[in-house]
Amino acid sequence: MDLIPAPLSVIRPETPGTFALDAGTGLTAAPGLAPVETWLRTVLGAATGLPLPAAPGGIELRLDPAAAPEAYRLSIGPEGVLLTASTPAGAFAGAQTLRQLLGADAYRTAPLCRTGWELPYAEIEDAPRFGWRGVMLDVSRHFMPKAGVFRFIDLMAAHKLNVLHFHLTDDQGWRIEVKRYPRLTEVASWRERSMVGFRAADRRDDRPHGGYYTQDDLREIVAYADARQITVVPEIDLPGHSQAAITAYPELGNTDVVDTAALGVWTDWGVSENVLNVSEATLRFFEGVLEEVLEIFPSQFVHLGGDECAKAQWRESEAAQARIRELGLADEDELQSHFIRHFDGWLAERGRRLIGWDEILEGGLAEGAAVSSWRGYEGGIAAAKAGHDVVMCPETHVYLDHRQGPGEEEPIPVGFVRTLEDVYRFEPVPAELTSLEDGGAAAAHVIGTQANIWTEFMDDARDVDFRAFPRLAAFAEVAWSALPAPAERDWEGFERRMAEHYRRLDALGVEYRPPGGPHPWQKRPGVLGRPLDGPKGT
Ligand code: ACM
Image (cartoon, rainbow, N blue to C red; front, side, top):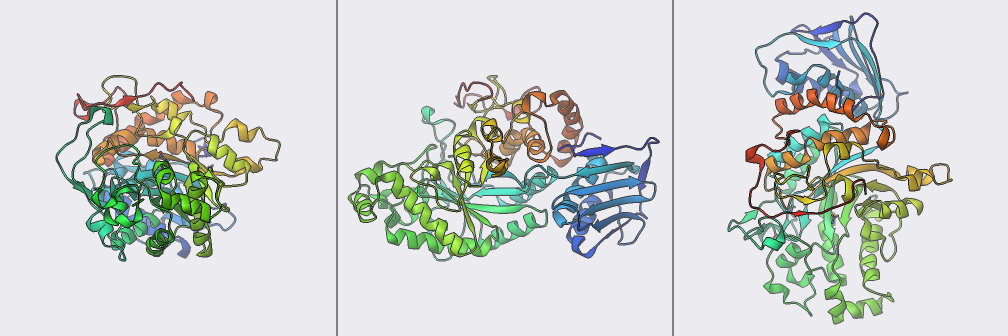
């Protein structure tokens, strides 16, 4: 069956057989599962050309209130297909499994002239390991037009991934329309040129780069994702990674140490020194931004970044130092912490929860905040031990911008070598948590895991395909399936299943990295990267 991610259990009958789908095959659903019925009819109808009328005698989606959220059972026999779940999310996961069972052509957008759509008799029981199975997509460094975002959401859904962490703002571009502050899109949504390759080459193109999503575009993206059981968690990165916003509104910067009016949207990669000031006016400004963010994104979590906030300007700024004294803070770390805590409380008052990169631990973790652990596992371990929820996404393991092989032919090779097998052997819950004698309390704070796609070196969706796939398929299995410890994982079995999965990706038109290395047109000869020698498995 070559299912990816692997389900909990599959039982095949002693006498194998198949249930055939044809023009008479019906598709029905219990009222609560109607959105999944619609999705299934649309997607399978497009690929197969079958009408799947709303009539009994074929595929039935049935509610089973006793099933765990997101769990499903798929029974395929001579009478037809019965898919049971307690939620649309569970039924949707089962519908994705059903699509895989139909073969690679079920992933096409329009039908080939073929018949013979068959589902093998089987009883499949399935449920995810983690509730947060995420991907962070950076649309600041390179903007992804919304058509590409819809496609990316479909690819996530096909892999049973359910959180799109949408990195909407950074030094190099602001991508969300804010009605109160039009200069954020007029000025901050584009830059004059971009760095080509790693900064040491000091090479730039002469091509302006930009784009942004209107609020209606974002509502459309949220609704599209919701119909595929995916939550969009917006990220507004504060108080660092803010040069684009400061370019649009110079008063947000440290005006007593830099001439912020002279800044432009950053055309370099790296970490800009230009960070927000921490005045009351700046807090009010971002409350205004966030009021609009909350109207667009219904997600429980809102990501406020908090990573890599350079402190040099705060050290030099008399205004920042006066603020530290006025607030009775010890240092610049506590100033950052004050800023994040302010928004933690602000979000909590509005029924939301803050999540931030693990730097938000420095200077004291905001109460109720959750952490995206990116600088290895350490931040996540500390946060989980302190009772905070954690999404494990260590740079050492699941940064999909990092190179996929050791060879010279990898395009703009950055970071550690992280092969498909390395990602398959990634374990989100470290032994430091599972070995605690706390009845599993701290480990249970790891609510999930996420792969991060930073796009400095991916200037379009083709490049994103190349770096994300096939590794996102391995990551999806790590996030969904009940896998044994990394050393005991059946890598050969996964590789065998991947042979069929590559055919699915081909049918979807995904330009993944082939197992033997990049195609000639996927290489970037002469563009400088920055390979790092990370010890394997660190
Ligand atoms: C990060 O990679 N700066 C979260």
